[in-house]
Image 1: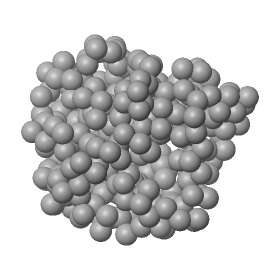
Image 2 (image 1 turned 60 degrees about the vertical axis):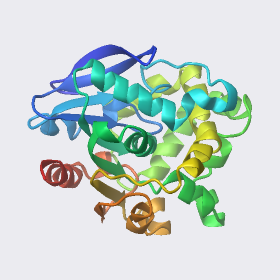
Image 3 (image 1 turned 90 degrees about the vertical axis):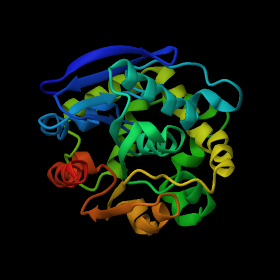
Image 4 (image 1 turned 60 degrees about the horizontal axis):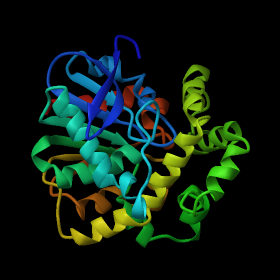
Length: 289
């Protein structure tokens, strides 16, 4: 990303890739599947004019560490993934920070705002409803359109083996299905996502992430079902995406947080790639408040 330096940061017993730039209040950006920190390329340079921006690769993704999943896929629980990023920010000198997460990164952010509330000053979740809510309300429409939620959780090595037969096809089909804006993911960015997706360790870690979401993450969610996020929460979503079409997004987050605002953008799932200027404007207004 223009103006960013790449760092490999030791945190929580692992090493994480992060792109860092800017001065001002710290801001952590967390990507989703199947992207890396590169998904923020269109908006991060502008955010770095006002903030110290850290765009990190989640464990298992990009050039970050890919540990074994362990019993119940615990290593890819959102609890562990949240610990990673809190430790990473602390190593960079930021014990408190604003947080923006998209897709899987937003699920990590949700858990972080519960487990590490003093660290999170403001939180934006992009194009998700809470994991437990989405599983609890699963119907044919959701299962058909988000089929990978049920494919990737199948026991190893079934999904890994099938995706490994043609990773380029699976990745391209996945991104094209999520985006409603042709060309939003330009060839150079797609090439970077594919570079990472061609690594069998990455594909296995991604499956472990989803397996954890369908198992141990739901256990953690049930244990603190009454807990509420107290940091101001902004929800953004694509009006033409699955989440926007199937859920009242603000209502789902008002069940989980005490201070919720947000709105839809005219796009699919990849807000920061499909509608970067509108996404940037919404984030700047929220983060400067």
